[in-house]
Length: 93
Picture (cartoon, rainbow, N blue to C red):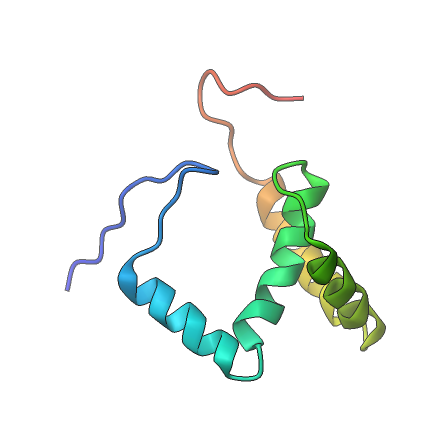
């Protein structure tokens, strides 16, 4: 099975029907998918790419209080983001 994804751009990406299905299923299962998304959004927000909702900010703090889970998850994500190469013509700081 050849699973070749189309190239997507930040802010213009799409999800397939199956990705939407599995995300919803993951959220139903004790909010697991949602709680995994929160540290990712925190890392992206620190790069100025997204804004977190007040609910996401709340759950991020809760995750940080619980053995630092949210913080340690964010650190790994920020490390990966710091290694992203900018495409030609894309402004960098």
